[in-house]
Length: 152
Ligand SMILES: [Zn+2]
Image (cartoon, rainbow, N blue to C red; front, side):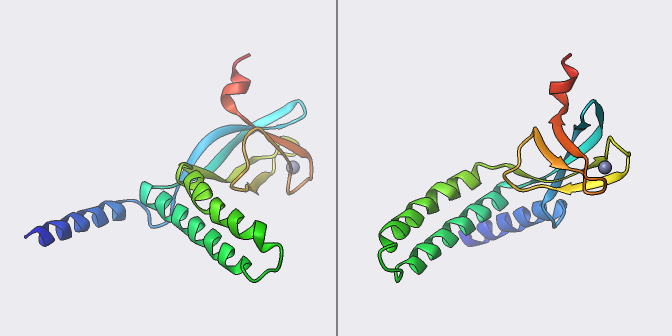
């Protein structure tokens, strides 16, 4: 009786998951692409994680760091630092990852210089405002939040 209850709950949870896309959801936010005095509209695409995905990502990071701690055991002298370092980093980084609701994926839009279509891949650690170069004409670009620039 109890078992079947758990089972049906699981079933509905699975169905809820299936409602969304199989891929992590991409959220879009309007930003500005600046180059000197020129500016154009851009879209910041971020990967948004469900609570389950956040937990999975956190556990993966934890597991990886503890594997590294284990792998550091045979390294002479350095293991006095590496083993406890990776051991402590496991839960800390896992917690940080769990608290991360989304990570930036890429920015798409038009280059303000020659208005060509561009798409710039972002690192998970990238935060706005950030500076980069146009992948087409190599002009220096700045990605900024919209709120900041509409204040004036
Ligand atoms: Zn360009």
